[in-house]
Image (cartoon, rainbow, N blue to C red; front, side, top):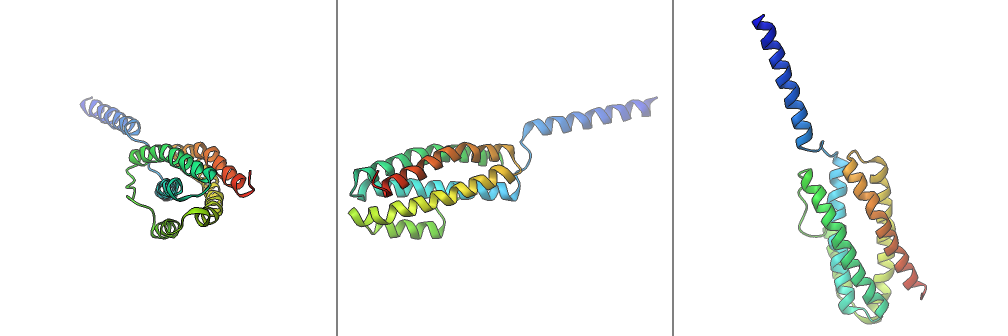
Length: 171
């Protein structure tokens, strides 16, 4: 009888521990999810810095305004990325990748119409690539939170692409 009671109590404790652990933390994010969070964060940092450069160095008011919009929207998107990354214990880098930093330096060296001609098409290309990455994560990511983050970011990134294409076409 005592052995039966001890076995029952042990089973109940193990079950309660598993239930409590499951509710205490989200399931682990996959390597793909973690890589997406790091990449999205670095992309946001790049867009924020690039937008600030556009605000200062662009000739066209449309490009300056686009820069302001990127700063605002990517700051908001990055707040969400940072929150989700924290839930999964993903350490985010403090700056863009080396390649992104080189691109930012290239634009920082330009001003006026030369800046506008270089920055706008590069932004269109970057946002097209980001849409592909968002679609991939939304459809094949493991974490529902990370997949939702990708789905939520997509319309904002699409608006930025449309904005850059409109500026390119003189609209």
